[in-house]
Length: 409
Ligand code: PLP
Image 1: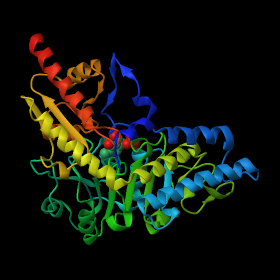
Image 2: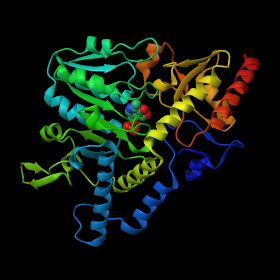
Image 3: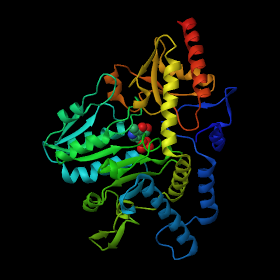
Image 4: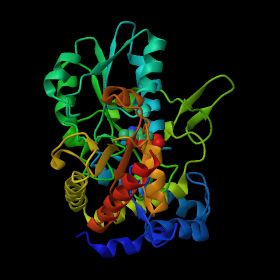
């Protein structure tokens, strides 16, 4: 269960910022790391550090076991059929770019369609823009409902027989909206398109089952799920990955290298050119152990409760607008807002003066900002180490900011 004890596992949270105990509400940007993850990476460097897949010595074998052991943990975490379907990369951005550059280039032709939504992170927009330009394809956007949700009618209206790729965020990093990606995958498949899921904000917060979702690709980042930066995962269905060409060439990913031609290793290594992020994988494995012990269902429930409490308390502040679905059950622990007359950057600065860390800006989602008709917003994002007391501190800070700017203007 999730209780106050959990916070004790995160040493960074035990500090003061500007004379106040830190309240960290920016986990959607990156989460904090428990001591278990920090220790696992430290132990790896102190005891086992070596390169993988080539050593005949003991350290090399230990490093390989840890790296491949982490892959098995990821496989189990997302319920992939096989570790061949789990590719270690730098993060969500790299994973989506790999799909666009490899699968996209080979399968999208002039006049074909790539379908995304207005609520995508730049990482799930620009790779498709580039692909569309290169192939002469059409990039289409699924319309959003007024409350920032997606209806299957709009999905059906956007996907046609020319659609080759549908790519959608599972949980919006701005609105917190949880999208019906399983149903969207079904519609995509009915039209012969593949379904790519941006799972960056989902993997930290929900139980992921790629077989149940029946998506073709699923991308996520370790650093948002209490793991280290620099490691992320692309899940892909084996038959699709097998047919795809690598986009990075060099050591580790080859089988045979001749003077003018080379062949690749089998899955998943053909996509992992160069020395991999070994300590990162070890840290991600420890993060998965930690989250699994807490229980993803408990984390999801906790986030709905945090969102509900935050929305309830914040709605008592006059002039404060919250974006996204009104029903906290329809969103993860992300609450994006603006306070009338106060720029979100100024708001975030005043909150920081009181020890409360929130994000302000366009959140790497400029098309969504345009759709919301704002230039920027403030965002509080909650994770398993946050409590109602943290929301209270946020609300106190917002009231102070409101008073402060009333005098300034
Ligand atoms: N997609 C979403 C929904 C995100 O929130 C983020 C990061 O904020 C990304 C993609 C990109 O993740 P990364 O920077 O780890 O590649």
